[in-house]
Image 1 (tube, one colour):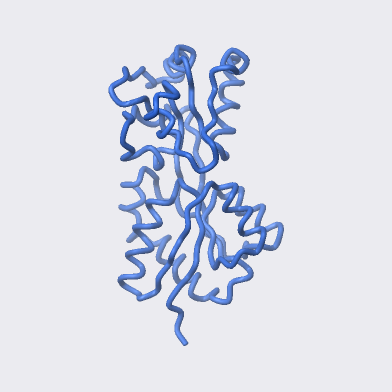
Image 2: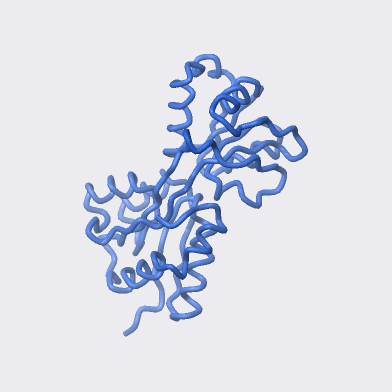
Length: 230
């Protein structure tokens, strides 16, 4: 009997991209790929707890941890996209200059309230602030978005004046103005990968899906969603 459905789970950063690409895959191949999107930590926990998924899409380091625990097939893992961090402000607010590292540092120091995300990009952002020597100065002005809540939501509510998150998660959100990506010299890049879950009984079908997702046919969509092919 042919496979008609592959069940996946992903983090919020790749939600829009995977919804588009999996819909295209279903249209052309007849295989549905319902993919739930949750916070990355929650997705990793679900796979680690042996919830019935066929494929998981997460940051490469999270996939590596799942592979080490025997929850995904490391040999079949593929890199999908490179995803960078961008900055945004509430809609209508002044947009600070972030074109250079020095300008971004000044913008951060001037912001009354700074929102950042959970996951590897948020950790890296805090490390950048520490490297600049301003971590302690910002301690009472930092606001981490709750798991599964976009940084843009906090900006739109007026809870923060400057926010940082994956560009893919800021594109198209109402109530914010996107400033743009971080300067290349300090850009925080996350590689998002995919791997078949070891509990899946549809490994061949998952491999076919991953071949499609890593093909050049998907490159334009990846760029449109604020990422680049890995």
